Length: 303
Ligand SMILES: [Zn+2]
Image 1 (cartoon, helix red, strand yellow):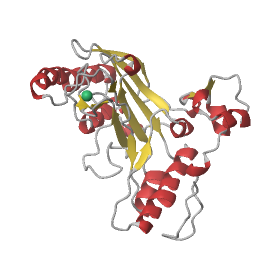
Image 2 (image 1 turned 180 degrees about the vertical axis):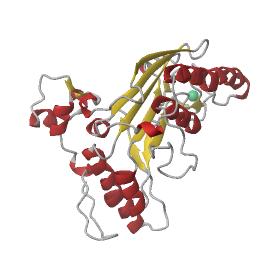
Image 3 (image 1 turned 30 degrees about the vertical axis):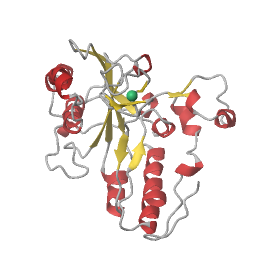
Image 4 (image 1 turned 90 degrees about the vertical axis):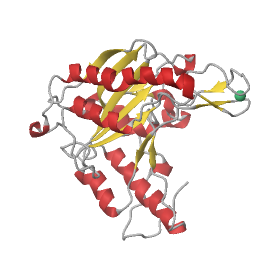
């Protein structure tokens, strides 16, 4: 898995990434924080476009300009963003909305607040053409996530940004997941309720499905002191010219497997699984596509 050199046109990437994160995202957010004290609106930056910029800087590939599906980057890659920074939270007592930087509920004063951390990537496949696009024509999906690594400790001062690549031609289980979504979920919903557009496929970061798809991490950084003096520290970066290998896919924590799966695959005593281990794991029954013969054939979803 390697990006064609003809598409790589952005250099000095690390420096550009750092500048972009500070100048286009985290410094503007600082002034939004000040304004949000008055407006009580979230200081959240809209994620769509910043993530596209970031994906270009990380991969070294310019945007595809057309804005069409499968044309986020010039090499045909699709970019997906997930932003867990500045999600709006909920008061557990009175159910009011609470902003991320508010320490208690503005309505009832309770400090019993549910901090939301459920943003995910969305994959849409609405036709056979789009299925073909996702499986065979898009060389690579670039998944970017921004999240608080210390959310459990209510530490909202540092953010982690990671980018992963999944190349559908090489990731067999990712292909199966997409096929399953289209045939068993999308078409099933259309069949039952033709006027309603079915929800897109949720692709949860750090889930069973995520690890099974063998994502390769290409970028990892921490942004510290985001609410006062943002500072970017890049932890790891795979340069645009470097070969991506499934051997370096994300290690799967054993504890996200079910007990019976750990036993079935003899993973007892292990904490993390490498590519060879992950290869042995099958998708769960609900995630397997039933083979299809003809268009819009009714397929009973397994549960
Ligand atoms: Zn409340």
